[in-house]
Structures are given as C-alpha cells and as structure tokens.
Length: 173
Figure 1 (tube, rainbow, N blue to C red):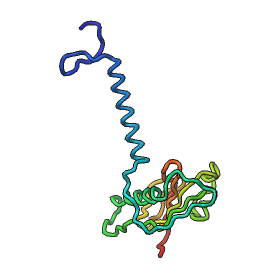
Figure 2 (cartoon, rainbow, N blue to C red):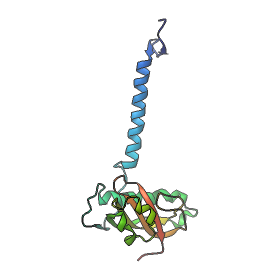
Figure 3 (cartoon, one colour):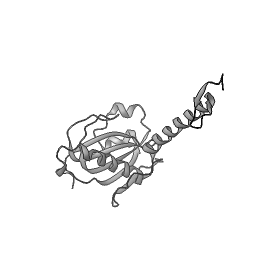
Figure 4 (tube, rainbow, N blue to C red):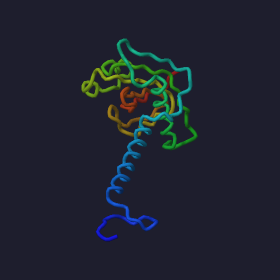
C-alpha cells in the first residue's frame, strides 16, 4: 500500500501513525501507573504489631499509621544489602509512629532542620521511632548522610508517603 506511512506488522499489514501514537500513550500510562504503585503501592510488608500510635490534636492524616510503620520498616529493609558486614544485621522493629504537624516534629526528633519545616509548617508528617540498620548512606530532603546507628527516627510525609529525613541515634531500650 503506497502513501501510507507506518510500520508493517507480523501479518504484513500496515500500522498507521495514529495507532503507533495510541500504543505509545498506553505504554507511558502503564509506566506512570507502575511508578505510582511503587511509591504509594499496597504491597509493602507490614511492621510487626506492638508499636504505639499517636495523632496530635487537630491533625487529620492521609496515610494510615500502619502504612507509615510499613514505610519505615521497608526503608530499613532496603538497606540490608548495603551492610558491609551482613552478619551484624538487626531486623527492623517499629517502636512508635506519631502524626504531627511539621512545626511540632522537632519535639519528637531534634534533628529536623528548622529551614525544612519553615517551608510548610502545617504539613502533616509521621515520625517513626525504629530500631534496625540505620546506615544513613543517602541524602534526603530533610537529612544528610551520616554516621550509622542501631536506632533512630524516620520522618515521613503524610500526603505522599515519601521519606523526608532519617535520623540515626544510639541504642534505645
């Protein structure tokens, strides 16, 4: 068929540009959906039960306490392959999760930088107190890489589920 610009398919028929564009849009939509599922997906393993939950007065959350705990645990699980000495691995244990406004997060985690909070002080965050492999090898929006410790706090944005900061500290009972 002359004059038709396209690609021959397996059967020898010509596929026009319109169909190619539609297929391309479907592929882009599938990739976007998979990115959404990875960042907000439901497939994270849950944290072991037994952690305490608190929500500050006047705070309404988008992310559930269980989801915040699972995000914190998953973050620590992802660090396990990065251990220089895998024999020292400590399974993550979520001790507590607390939903607060960003302006109040420094009461739970003193390492939260004031300049980060200043950009949106009413933002709701979860502060997860966790023990496990806090390698702290990567910079995050609210924290920088630093010294590893066996416990600490993880600050999670309530609206997106993104980890804003990781703050390792010494052992906790």
